[in-house]
Amino acid sequence: MGKNHKMDLDLPLPSSVSDEDAGGDTQTLTGRAVCHAGCGRPSRVCLCPHLPPSPLHTSTTVVVLHHPHALRRNPLSTLPLLARCLANFHLLPGRRLRPSSTPLLPSTPSPNPVLLLFPSPAASDLASWCRSTPPSARANPTLLLLDGTWQQAKEMHAASLPFLSSFVVPVSLPVDSGVDGDSMFESELVVKKEPHKGCMSTMEAAARALRLLEPEGRGAEIEETMVRVLRAMVGFQAEHLQHRNIKPRTKMRKKKDIKREEEMKKNAGLL
Image (cartoon, rainbow, N blue to C red; front, side, top):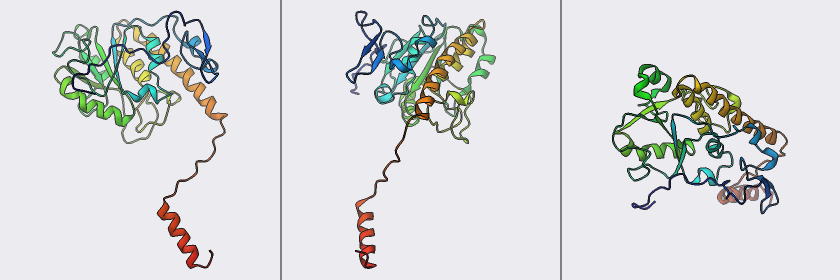
């Protein structure tokens, strides 16, 4: 990005369509029916029956900084579903946050905390932070998440810290860096292979955090609604992989290795 480039607030998701077009299933250029009026997924794996009738209202403002490639190149991204589950949700495309990024993030400390959910060494366990913080000091928080590959998220975190470090509260959900893969909550919710136990999709992370942050027991209801959608998505993916005939990948060999093998065969009188 250029130095003067401001990130657009609430960028429309790829499945978004105009009111005139939102009439149900339509055909894509490849002939595959897509549910444009609802979840934006192929009709045969439509998740509309699992989505809440209307986006859920939360006292927590959920802001996601997503890497520019997170939606374009990741068919398993949970961001489109997250946007359809939460009313108070804002999507920011970019590789880092800065003062000009969005008015949603104050450049100075405010009465309402801004929580950066990322498993950094400085992060406090979110559940512990909620228990030790009076309700008045954690009312109407902003939950900030980073969406991308694990490497992209680390780079986005490091690039954004110069701006964020003066006012955010770094928090995390349980992570075990010594164990590979799987959610710390439900292994059935793993969308793809994760580097560490506890790394999870952006949607699951938001659901688990909202359970703790939302007042008057609303958190558990919101979490279950979001997790139900995620379970359905993972179920479709598992069924697809089960019936898919995957051909073994041809191992690519370097030219120097092929040349060496040919020379060995020639020396052995095989050529």
